[in-house]
Amino acid sequence: MFKASRRTATRPMMRWLGGAALLLGALGAAAPAGAQSAPRDALLVLREIDADRYDPARTSSLAAGEALFLLSDTLVTMDWDQRTIRPGLAESWSISEDGRTYTFKLRQGVTFCDGKPFTAKDAAYSLKRWVDPATRSPVRWRAGPVQDIRAVDDHTLVYELKEPFSELLLQLTQYFGSIVDQATVERLGDNFGVQGFNGTGPYCWQSWTPRQEMVLTKHPRYNWGPPIYKNPAPQVERIILRIIPEATTRLAAVQSGQGDVTQWIPYFALEGLRRIPTLKLQQQPVHFFDHFLGFKVDKPVSGDPAIREAVNLAVDKQAIAKAVFFGAGEAATAYLNPAALDFNPEAAKLVPQFDASAARKVLDEAGWTPGSDGVRVKDGQRASLLLYALQTAVNSTVMQAIQADLRRVGIELRVQLWDATVGWGKLATQEFDAFVMSYPYMSATDAFSLYFPSTNRPTPNRMNWNDPETDEALRQARGATDPAERARVMGDLQKRIAEANVWLPLLRQPLWVVSTQRVEGVRPHGIYGVALYKGLDIRLTR
Image (cartoon, rainbow, N blue to C red; front, side, top):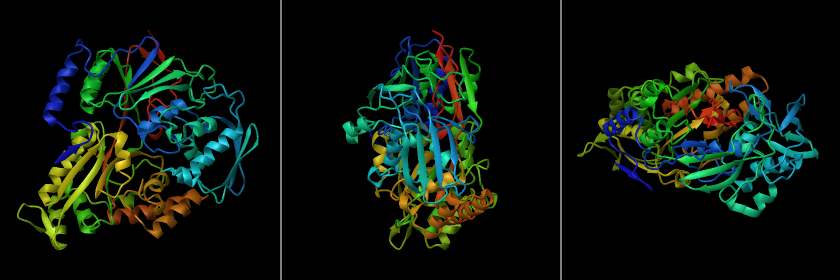
C-alpha cells in the first residue's frame, strides 16, 4: 500500500470529508495547529508544499514559481489571457526577418534588491547561465537553440538563435528566464536559491525555513511592474509564504483569519466558501494545468505496451475527478486541454477510455494470467508497478483510487509518496516504474517539449521515451514560422504518443483563489500554475 516520507501521507477519505464539513461550520473556532496570525504589515500566503530550491535555472516546480515570480523579473511578461506578451524588463523588442535574432531594449532605473543597477550584462549572464549545460537546467530547451546572448550596451540585449524558435517570447515569460545577480550566484554557488537570492523582483529574500515558511520583504525601489497591473510597485511590506500541508488545516486557517490568501483550496470546500460573506472566491478560467501518470517505457513491466494500455482502460478517471474536484474540475480524456494551442481532437480519440472488461481482455491476450493472489504473471514476472509521486492531498486521493482500479484487473500498484524537498531528487532516479505528475503548460509544443525529448532523460522525461521521430517533430514544431505547419506537426506527434500509451492522462485542475476581507486586489493569474504572479495590486486593509 502507501508509504510516506517525512510525514503520514494518507488518511481515510470519509474522515477527510467529515473533518472538512466540521471546519466549514466552525467559523468561530480557534486557530488550527500549524497556523499563526499574520503580522499587521505582512500578507500571509498559505501553500501546500515547498520547493527543493529557488534557483530559476535549476528547478521546474510550481512551488518554486510561487516565490520566484515575486523575487525576480523576466524580459517579457504574460497577460491574464495566457496568450498576449507584455513588456517586462524589456520595454520593447524587435525580431529579424529570418526569426533568428531578437533585440530587446531594456528599462532604465531598474535595480537589484541590494541596490545594484540592472544592465543588459546581467540579462545576458542570467540567460546564458540558464542554457549552459553545466547548469543542468531541466528546462533548458525553453530558451530555444541559442547561438549567443550578448549585451550591446547597458540597455540593449541581443538574443541570437541558431534557427527560428516560434515560442521564444512565450517561454521568456516563465520564471526560468528570471534575471539574477551574478555576484550573488558566484558567492553562494550551489546554495544560490537555498541560502539567499538577489533579483530585481517586487520582493526580496529575507529568510527560508524549508517545509515551514519563506519571508519576503518589499523591494523599496521597485516601480517597473508589468502593465497588466494598476500599480507598478508592491503595496505590501512583507509576504510570508507559509507551508500548511493538510488541506483541512489550510481551510480552517483562512476561515479563522490565520491566513490571508491561498490557491490551495480543498475542492470539497468551494461551494461552502461561496456562502461565507467574509471570504472572496475567484477563478481563473484560462488555466492549463494537468495531472498524468507516466510509465517508464524501458522497465520490465511498464515497458509492456499491453500493461500501459490496460492501465489506461482500467482507471475510472471520471470517478477520480468527482472524488478530487467535487465538480470543480474534470477528467483528462486526452494528453492536452482541448482549449490549448495546437490541440488535435483526432489524437484525443486514440486515448483509451474507461473499460475494465477491455483491460482484462488486453492482459489476457498479452499472456498476463492471474496468479494465486490475483496479481497477474507473465514469464515469471508479476504485474507489479512501483510508483513515485509528490506528497499532496490530491495525489493521496488519486493514488488510492488508481490502486483499487488496477487491483480489480490484476495489476498491483505500490505507491511511494515523497515530501517535495526530497521528491524531485527521487523522481530523477531510475528506481520506479511509474510516476504521477501535475504540470502547467501553454501550448502543445510547450507541453510535449518538456516531457518527450530524448535529451530530457532522466528528468523531466522520466518515461525514458527515446524516439528519434519525436525529437525531429519537436525540432520542426519549435522552428516553424508558419502556425499551420506547427499545428500539423504537433497533431501528428500527439497521435504517435497517444498510440504508445506513454501516459495515463488523469485530471484537468482548475485554479481558484480564496482571500479574506483583510486583503484587496487579489486576482488569480495562472502563469505556470501560479495564482499571485507579481501580486502588485494586492494591499492590506488592516
